[in-house]
Length: 403
Ligand code: ASP
Ligand code: MG
Image (tube, rainbow, N blue to C red; front, side):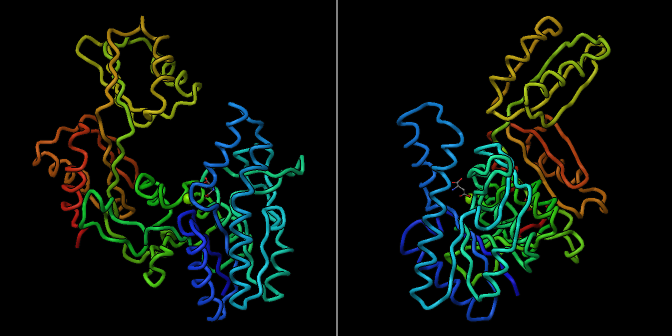
């Protein structure tokens, strides 16, 4: 069996922890598995390197930044390799270039273009454990070191697993899987055994700290079976993220997510001239603002009211865009004190009454819903921020996710 394992920054955060990772690897190797291990930089290291660069410049050259940042992962790969040698195992550490990872030349956020596996295949044949420095590659056009964007080691692992047709890609962090909701909000949250790629992507606000979103998208594309598990409790099985067909009995609702980083923009008394909505949303799209939920209603005066949400981080950009429409509306309002709760589940596709259950559960708690939007596998509701946690607990119970 060929396994790709990835260890995140906290898992390799100290020399002792790198030693702990070495003993996890040792066990698997003794079971006879071929192993390709991808490592992050020791936790805090990448930020430290960025600070070093900022000592000299507010806007360091991107190519130099990549040369600098890629070094963090290389340190860990060599150290882990040395630790394993000491335990008597044959290993080879590889930079992104040596692992054959070719990328675009978008320095600091390069995309993987192709992977040449010859080097890795040879090492596997030689019986070596491969330790790859994550988060990096080499640009096809300029033959320079690139990095894949923050959190990019997950992407390295998934891409290698895809290219090598590995049986499994296990992502080790300091949490032991994906939960039905954030256990800090609802202590009764349960760890899921399996979840589909699409659900995982929708639950990003739960999993973002666990798995980089881009890597989940890539896993879906390349059909890589991903496991989220912890290096601190390696005997505990994690959560498998896989294609929907591999999940025999999907629950109607799999998880509840809470996102407090949205702002509601209300535009009232919008002139009801054809094309105004298109003008507004085109302007927002042109400014690269990620509009999430949109509701339009037409009042008795035939004027429109528009409600939509944007990420808090885009608020200033949004206000700038809105200025252009100042004369087309009676009032524009921004409300940051909102939360978006979402219920997610592939089982929704084939069940009725899923949405009404959510609405009644929230109504029972006197929680007002301001905007509702639905997709095939998700129902999102905008509510007052102060009820966010209560809503999560209420919905968690309503769908019996603690059972
Ligand atoms: N070290 C890089 C970061 O901190 C990449 C990674 O850890 O995945 O973003
Ligand atoms: Mg990470």
